[in-house]
Length: 231
Image (cartoon, rainbow, N blue to C red; front, top):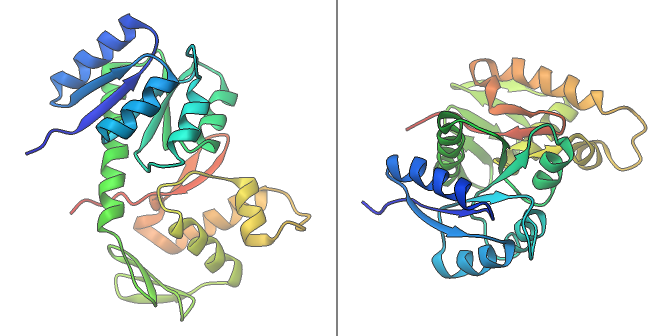
């Protein structure tokens, strides 16, 4: 079986060595870069399965590199951010990152976050879409019927609940800010607060029952539709 290849991008040689050892001990193949420009080149040439991308680097920072990589690649990207820097975390997500890890981190946390992102990418490939439905295992969104089918039981949703669920589901695996959600679901001229999004997400979680954790909270940012089943 082909090993999963992970590109580590960081200008700190000690951190590169530490991460490489952690990942190789878990069976991953590791390649390295020390700045954003190298990351862009290596992503094109090596086509890694996942990228660990530091924010603060010489030549080209992680934000810029992430944005440019997204121009030609959907490879999952996890940003490595400074502890307590909420701006770094939000900026990374806005530039196309799939997740972030706050430094310093433990080997267990690093491995868990990588596995979660890789699992999500694999599940997205298994998810199916046809003209009438969005299907995520036992969760089916009936597009024409504007309803939710859960384990064979149909539930009619209120208009905004349905619109919100479809918007999140069609962008599954992508972190969306509350502002983005408000603009797309409620319209750019909506005058209410962002708490409206929180209220509707909580209602949808109840409708989804045991699958309510598909609607993941991205702390300080918004929400992400993330399928957590394994097949």
